[in-house]
Length: 168
Ligand SMILES: [Fe+2]
Ligand SMILES: [Fe+2]
Image 1 (cartoon, helix red, strand yellow):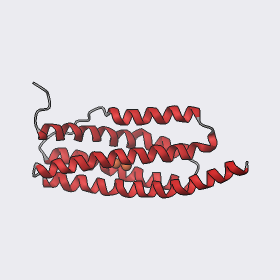
Image 2 (cartoon, protein in one colour; image 1 turned 90 degrees about the vertical axis):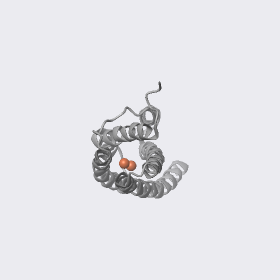
Image 3 (tube, rainbow, N blue to C red; image 1 turned 135 degrees about the vertical axis):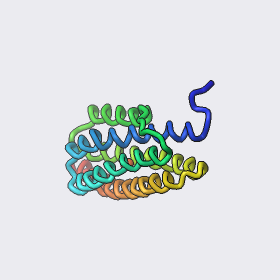
Image 4 (spheres, rainbow, N blue to C red; image 1 turned 90 degrees about the horizontal axis):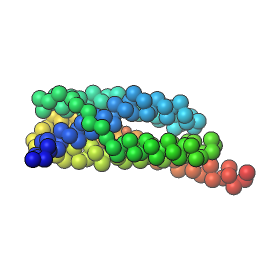
């Protein structure tokens, strides 16, 4: 028998997956990025999203409890892959392009989170778990806003960086 045999079990597994991601982002990944980037607007945006991410952890834990389950994180291979890709690219890229690498990594992470929360919200809705739907939707909307911010900054930084390299 497969371990995951119902929508509820799949939902709980994927909720554990995003809990792992949110905890990793709050504890380590976002603080590391904040220390790494140079652009002031990007740094400020990351600091704001770190605050939001701390709340995302709490919302996901609360979603578990709303189903009478204990919060349990599941190692997320997708996120680990994104992290590895970022670390490798950092090694290969000159210091002047760090912000652009990190903007790409941030956009990929937000897109991953958005897809995860959309799937979770869909399942919670189908299961009639209204409290979980609300909690997941709060996170989803903030991820969408964070992605829009990152895209806006990435456009500016890309233009500045292309101009600088052209005149170098
Ligand atoms: Fe998040
Ligand atoms: Fe996020």
